[in-house]
Length: 227
Image 1 (spheres, rainbow, N blue to C red):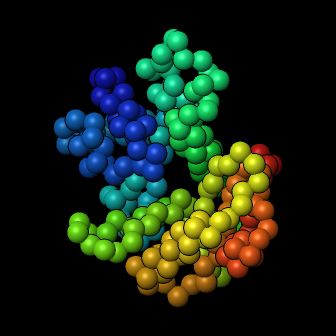
Image 2 (cartoon, one colour; image 1 turned 180 degrees about the vertical axis):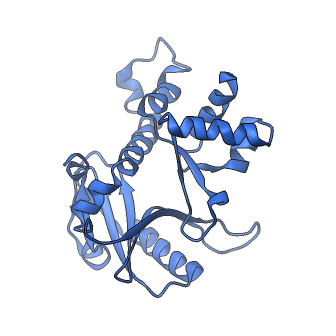
């Protein structure tokens, strides 16, 4: 039934970074079984959602994300629209920022080949994946999520941060700490000896400062996505 397809889409719309199959079932109030797998396949083949195999996990642990731009916009702004609220007000609120980040990430993940081209990797054999680490309940460990990993045949990994910003992005001391934490947690949990290249893909580029100079190995703007 279409109602269940909508439950999947709504569950994913409420979780920008995506959900596993089991979490979709729980959050969407669905029954476990082959029918859910078929629905996910149908939605993916139709271009509404996309699955990403985590870097260090099995296919069964794939994370699904909503990538249909209209669905992202409709469920954020139109589904429960207040006729008295103008677009000018909506576009200044937190919901607009969240939607912008979700939409930008979705567009980036649809253009991985263009990102590889911008990085000069089209001639290299690569594997692409996402990655997340959720500490056990009660643990004092830091969690981390990486939007896109490009694992290269030359013993290197591009750790890609997909960042929407309305102008040139300045990496503050706090944000630099967050980025370094991602690299540290990934390296520790995956036990990789590969060289990690922090790669920022932003709307209008990264402003050079001491933090960008020490951390960012490569920066691309959204223009590369449409070449």
